[in-house]
Length: 333
Image (cartoon, rainbow, N blue to C red; front, side, top):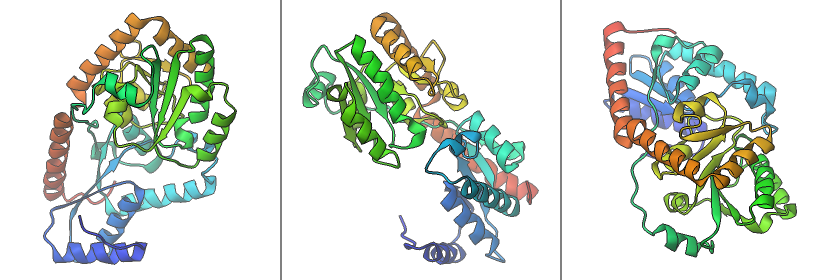
């Protein structure tokens, strides 16, 4: 790993020096700040030509983004414009984590569909350090507890407030229910803590923060729940499927690509906590259903989302970027 500096200008000059003094065939970026840095360095490095590619990991410019109170609409529109213009000028090829993300980029950034390849995310198979029983003891979870787990940073997209509201309804019917909230703080942390402080189910909710033992936490739970307002293809959901957990998730295009509705997951409407609660109650009331959903999710993981499959897909994508660029010398979307 090479450190380029703290400021944008330091990173710009550091990357430009690294690339012009080195021998690189392909430059790949992920997330907008890195995408823009790569594209601008490439455009301003006269006499040098690299094959450029980047990853599209979410539906960044849909109408759902404007419902996030932490986002100023005019800033998002400016960012979208800069993103689109820099794409047309630098012409990188793209990798999308879902068909939904690809279609979103085509619609909002004007990318040529032929320049976007979908390769799904992958996760490794994990051998837990501790057994399920041992880890539940560490978390002071009784043997009879029925545990839901949510993994995600405390941001508007993840809908923690809606999840807490849904869980309160579940806890009223099933006092043995417990909810684990796993993920680092974010823009909605103050709101989440305020809601937890007045929640009648607060003693049944464990807010665990950022953790390095997510695999063990998944395996000590019974159900994974993800009522997001928007998502790409959730890595946390894939990890839950690897662990054999039944899934409850929002009815979103990106999440639908990662599961099979009513076969590996129950879908819900994130704007209506009662639908999330209904799915959670159903998991507890129908243990045979939960077991079938978890087993099918594990099968889907092995078929489509292993780390090996993802790596092979990305390698083929990178090879195609170099081959297509050298063969066609593409210049614009």
